[in-house]
Length: 191
Image (cartoon, rainbow, N blue to C red; front, side):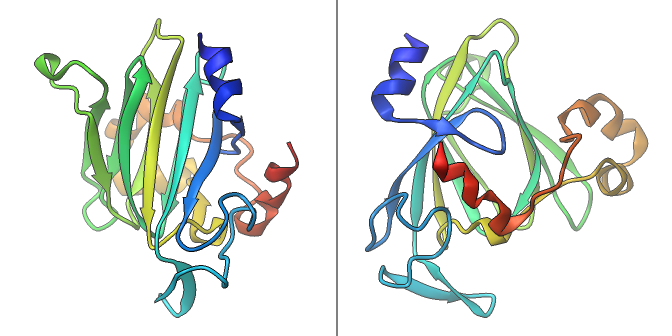
């Protein structure tokens, strides 16, 4: 089911892990701007630069690539559960270092949620629940996604922010080769 769903949705490898497809870029053709602003679409000024007003993607995490590494995005993201297993999000407030854990999944009786927001500037990482084959989510981003508004987290900065005791069990979510910020991800769209 997972592979046929991935193929049906036209998902391609995502540099954060898993697979994705941009499904909406306000006023512009999805995927055409290759993760950057499409100035011909609907735009807004954000932190001194133009950004499309809203973007949305499908993102699938699989058992073979079960993590979304520690990252920080400038824009607010709202995550929506669409199918498969559950995805645990770890979010860290950059002002206080406070860590929260939210499970995006279908079982409200167990405290899982079908959607939740992550504010821009907060650190986040995700991991597929053990023994689940995949999780398919949607992400809406406002102002719209631009790879230049993204950066990988390093172990040193996250440990300093969170404290060694809190960070230690989450260290495996740091991308070991956290190079390739921003526009370097353009090659992603050649998949």
